[in-house]
Structure formats: structure tokens, C-alpha cells
Length: 415
Image (cartoon, rainbow, N blue to C red; front, side, top):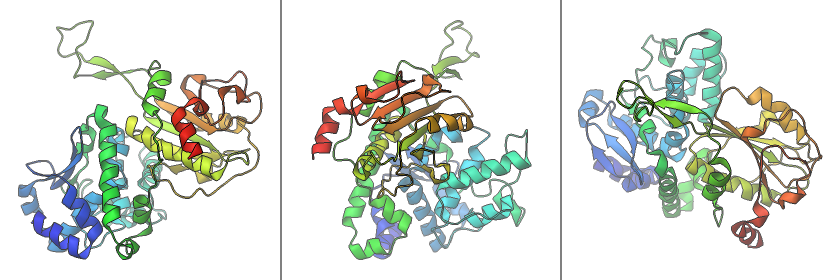
């Protein structure tokens, strides 16, 4: 069935057919019909033949669910949401948000598939179609806080808004929990594999075939990676590796104080879970410079799988224009363009800090005022395109990293 489906898609829908033809297929039992499961080198497609037989899908529905899985991989959902899925407070919301973001682009879905229309019926307010999964996640988080204060999870899901089906009626189709099992230490290698997978696919599509794809898919395939990737690993290990963000229990580790008590968990260092990036869009920053800096953030996603939110700023932070960064770099559309006021960033930070494990990065050329107040330096990094001595804020809170001293950045700028 899988081979026949891939052959059919290669003829009729080459984008999906070419991606599926490059994936490693594993047939084994699991908790759902389909799943994306990580190895140290790649993401593999897992199919449970028994559950597939029980699903009793039509041919078009089988094809739709294969497309569904490809879009999860294209938009990096497994890497972006692995941490959130480990939280019992957020797991169901993440499943609904990512499925809605994918299913809005598909037809012939199985009955009760989660879409933005079902989310709208659930939350009782307008929900735009074809949004990024993070937009749906934020809508669902607000709904959860308003309707079920003090509860971990909603007891009814999107399907219940119209037909009374239980919360996870669709979880037996597409397993998201396998995303949490990815080996963290090999995230960079999987990111490189994923990039190569879609780069190869895009190169094999004709202009006409690409033209039939929705805009969001074309944009994801049109990523232009930086010609030379900066050594983010060395920079982050040097400046952040010595700054653990607390500790968390881990039953996979021995308790060092009482190693013979197997019922007591050990501890591991808790890593950053959220990264907020403030991009200086003042008049002194060029479009090419901004685009190159954003292009380097794809490396952050690979090294530290986390949720990255980008906030443009000049004399103010443009909160309405923030967006979730997924590794796709488009033509820079300036929001600001005036002067630079770093104090605006520090004014909004208290509104955005809700939990531990949040890191703030300011991408800038360094030219602004000479003093800021109300700072928390323990989780702040300045990433400068100019020499560190030219950062106007003195003394600067947090850690200052200058790309002017990086030979790879200099070569990229000269090229």
C-alpha cells in the first residue's frame, strides 16, 4: 500500500511523492497508524499495519494522512514541539495546533480530523485559516486559561464542539509522542538531513510543479541558507555552557546522594526552552544584514531545539509583528526603520517572562543609547555585527558576542 501510494503521488503530486520516496519506512506496532520517529541521523516514517487495517481509511484518506506527515516534517513540528509535548498541561493543545496547521492544506481527510474550523467551534471565537501552528497554540492556551482555570487539560477536545467525540479521537492516526523520543545530542545532524531532504526535493520539482503548491509550502522550500554557517556551537558553548538554568529530576539518572535508592530520581541540567530574539530594524541596519542574521538562527534551532520568537524593534518593540521562527528566511519586510532604543526591549521583557528556561538575544549593530535600566543579565546575550567596543550601552548587561571577530562572518559579508 505504501509503495503504491508513493508511486501514485510521484505521478500526481510530485512534492509529496519525492519526499516520501526518500524517507526510511519502518513497519512495526505502535500507538498510532503513522508516526515520525527519530534516529541519530534522520527522521523515519513508522507505519503500524494492524492499526492501518483497523482505521479502514479510503484510498484518498490514506494519501491525505501521508501528506499530513510530510507537512509535519516540512514545518519542523517534531523538533519545535518536542519539549512542549512532554508537559501534561500542553500535550493535547500542541497536537491540536500542529494538526490544524497541517490539515488546513489538505482534503479527503479522515472523519473528525482537526482543522482550524474545529478549533474555532471549540474556542467560540474566530480563528484564521492556514496559520502557523504557534498561532493556534497561543489561541488554545488562552482558551484553556479562560475556561478551565486550575485544570491540567481540557476533558473534551475540538471534535466535541460539534459531535461529542472524546478528546483524542484522532491520536490513533498520527502519533506525536514519538517526537519527544528524539536523541537531543544529534539534533544538528537531523536538521542537516532534513534540510538536504527538502533541498533535493525542491531541486527536482519543475517550476510548474512548484507553482501548484500553496504559498506556505513554496516559502518553506525556497529557503536560502547562509552560504557559510557561523560556528554557533562554539559561541553558545563558550558563553552559555557555563550558565545552567536550574535542574530538573530525571529517573534515567542515579541519585548521587543515595545511589542505592532506585526510586529516587537523579538530576540533569535544565536547558533553555524558549528563545526570544529581538532584531534591530533601525535605519543603521541594512536589509541584507538583517536577512543574514536571521539566516543564522536556523543553526540555533538545530543546536538547541526550542521555541524561537522574533520581535522586530527600533525605538519601540513591535509586538504585533512578532512571529515564530521556523528556519524559513523570507525577504525582509521592515516594520520599523527609525532610530534604536534598547530600553524598549527591557521595558517589554517583564511582560514576556513567564517561566524559567527563557533566553533573550538582541541582534544589533550596537548603536543606541548609552544606558538601560530594569535589566536581568543572567539570560541575555547581545549579538553584534560591529566590534564589541562599539556597543553604546556601557556597562552592558548580559554577555556580548561580536561577529566582527568571526572570520566566517567576515568572509560571508565580503562575499
